[in-house]
Image 1: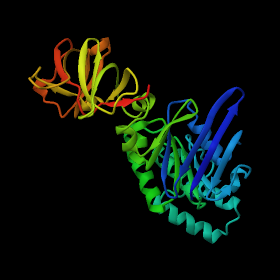
Image 2 (image 1 turned 90 degrees about the vertical axis):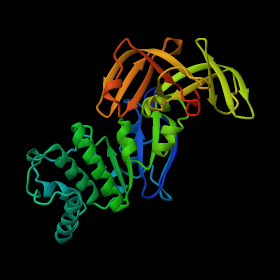
Image 3 (image 1 turned 60 degrees about the vertical axis):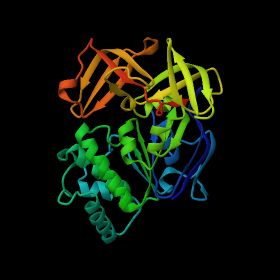
Image 4 (image 1 turned 30 degrees about the horizontal axis):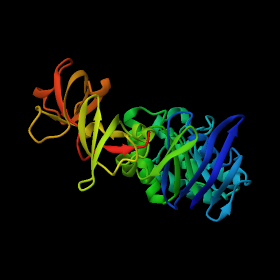
Length: 356
């Protein structure tokens, strides 16, 4: 089912929790609303679900305008952050709740539940109470209950936030597997950037109720359109520089900060200053200055964090702002200590000029 939002606004008194948001979510897409706490992502999801009425704008499922259709008639399945399982009902009865409310015949209820229990891999747990289940199993029950009613659209509000880190990884893979198997349009809310990148076909980043950027995970990561998108979708070094010149033949920008001159690939700047986004893994650790090499600087290691497959340095940078550098598969003998000098190169062809 295709979902189209046009100029959706939701107010809570003077607060514009959702501010003029327009989105198109394709049939069968796994679409994620991503942003920090308070950005409006859950409010937008609940407006799509029918728990809130928009103060302006239109919501369409396919060609059907659903603004004034109550939540229970929108053909959506909802998975809540706290799962909202009935503690006095066993797994089977929790999953059956929505079917019984729709007065589905008992034989069909048994058939549907048998099928969905296999999909979410809960075989053998049908008569167990929720209190006797692990967090991951409870999450599967909540997912099964949402899916068993055969919704046109699946809505998920931070469904993994109550799980430990390792279980979150395995469960997001399961959710993605089930979604692909069923081909159901899914709208997913999270504040976890890694989770969003792992499961999504497309992502919408929200900030203070407004859209910052919409696109595929790789598109947003490699080509963020704003400082907020660059810093929220992964980690990024934001560096402001003064433009000193532009080489039209080679599309090179000459820029300066704190007395250091840099050569960068890019289109002709529109003003006298530019803002760069440089991912930590794009910065190379080098032995020192070499003839012909551009953008090589020394810095003092302010801190280093060893993470096994990667080491993350915070190094003094130009304009007295630390630079974060990530070295993958580090050589144990070359790990720098705090206070040591580290030479690094800002890659001439990787930094992105973004809006502030």
